[in-house]
Each structure stands twice: as C-alpha cells, then as structure tokens.
Image 1 (spheres, rainbow, N blue to C red):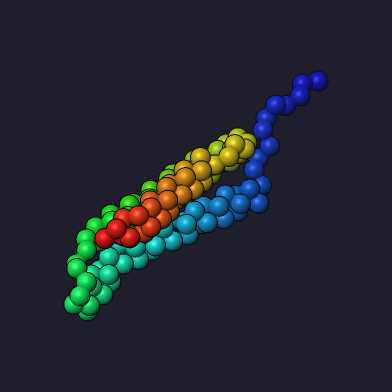
Image 2 (cartoon, rainbow, N blue to C red; image 1 turned 45 degrees about the horizontal axis):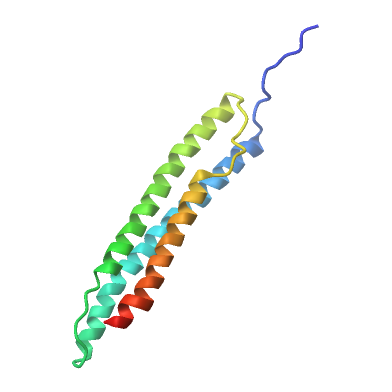
Length: 132
C-alpha cells in the first residue's frame, strides 16, 4: 500500500487570509503616502507662518520636503512589494505548497524604516530647530 505524499489543497479560508493581509498592506502603503504628503507640505505651512511674523528670520524647510518624499517612496515600495508577494502566495496556494511561516521581512523593514524616520524627525525637532 503506497501512501500519497501529495500536499493538501489550500482552502478558501487560506485564500481569503492572503487577500486580507494584502489589503492591510495596501492600507499601510496608502497611509505612508498620505503621511508623507502631509510632512512634505508642512514645510510650506511653516514658510507661510514665518512670512506672517516679520520679526522671525526665514528658515529652510527642506527637511520636511525630503522626509515627506521619502515616506511617499516607502509607501509606493510597500504597495509594489505587497502586490508581488500576494501574486506569489496565491500561485503557491494554487500549487498546494504550504504558506510561509517565517516572520514577514516586509513588516520588519517597514517598522525599522519608520523608526529611523521617527528618530530623524525627533533629532531635527529637538536639536536642529532649537539652534535656529
């Protein structure tokens, strides 16, 4: 008697779980892009604020522009990688291959990137802005 070593087919719940995860990553990417836009435009708000106060010297707000643009780029990268990973996971499930049980590299990279942006903004706000 021969035992079949064929992998079990994925169930509907597996496909739906992959789709929910994909949509969560899309929301994360959109939130990053929206937050990046707000950060980039915050520099324009500060410039207008300085124009309203004649006693204050105009300051450069390039940090907010570059930070916001970088956050938008991270959001675009998250969305592109999410789409690529979603397609590959669906193909793997269709072939009957088991899902990936390792921690998500994407989640770790996004978390570390956002922590670095947060640290850079905190340093900018406390050290650089205070001296200006």
